[in-house]
Image (cartoon, rainbow, N blue to C red; front, side, top):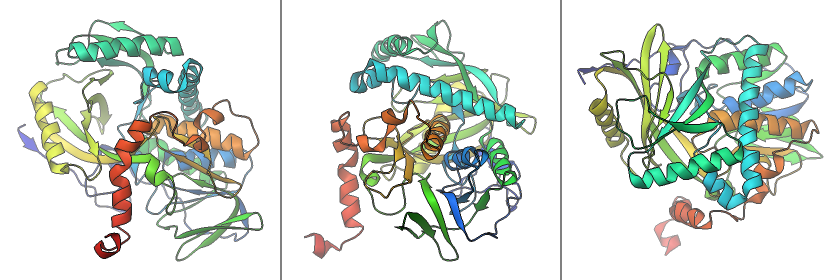
Length: 435
């Protein structure tokens, strides 16, 4: 690496996000969304969270004639949506062999079809509102580097095909990295997440929706069939409430069934033009993922990896390892961006979308998207919109949060959450209390 030049937009007109690291997407200007509430009546739906899940849910509901408000603790796109690498896939971090084994062949086919429907929805919205967000269909290549990985790759190929995914063996991984085997998934996609979120938010406001930024929710309630959402300077009421955050507000079961992980990303300018034209993934654990995006006329290699459970490793070490990995295979001119983002892995591998278990009627949740937040967040918006408007959704039962038992992945549940329980207790009681 010849030099490292990290750009930091400092204007309030730019997007901000969690942490000091600035993602490649944040250079886009924020829209004027307004922030005042002129109607203190009862909303049809209150959506907590201003990422892709919350804003897509809000837009879909608003377009169906519902009066909605989005409450965001920071700014829209502040969390994972502002830190994603914006891959849109019909294959997930939980592989089809795993889904088939834990849930069954029929359910694996449902998962596959749901990802296709999610991609269809985002392309529909882009076309409907003429959204300029650098959206492109891309083929995706998944490759192995040794015999053990190749065995798993063969299983993924067969189970994915059985589930209805368009995938075939390939002869190249389209990277300057050696490989053993490669498979190609057709018609995947990439886009600029904050350009897309800008447009979704603007269309929501244009349709009469309200967005409250920098309003932290302190309390939720339910009385006489009406939900309430409260913060220091506001109290809103609505017939439905949607928790579109990593975890719903307060202490709940999802604190124990979704394990937090962090992934690291570099935005790299190359000294040559060896930018991949496709989406590419290796099979390491954790895996690396690659794509190219043009920002302000400059090509960037967007590469991610070095994922670890939150609080279990050194972030700077992760960046150092990812930088060394990129320099090993690419002719790096500079690293202009580096950032990390948090995501949550559900105990049985599938997200929790739908009725909030043990909550009051009309309360919904969407969480546990693993590393597939753009795909599953968009899917969640459609499932919840259908639930609110009384439309039967073919995927509602598959992803319902009340399936938490956990039937599938019990060993994973115990492994991932043993320390969660300890931290949960330690954060709330003194050493004397615990002893």
